[in-house]
Length: 62
Image (tube, rainbow, N blue to C red):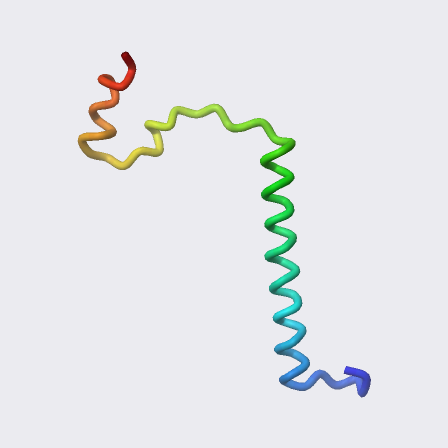
């Protein structure tokens, strides 16, 4: 890079560094959101797969 030209090896190294940075940033943001953000209030049955379990939800409300 010092010569003003980025060769393939340098490019691959920069891409790896950028990837690791993105992973670290997303992990950090995920942890921060778990600590400081309120959980969403939603009905979990909306996310259930269709079938007997989702259709038989009334028995779970006892």
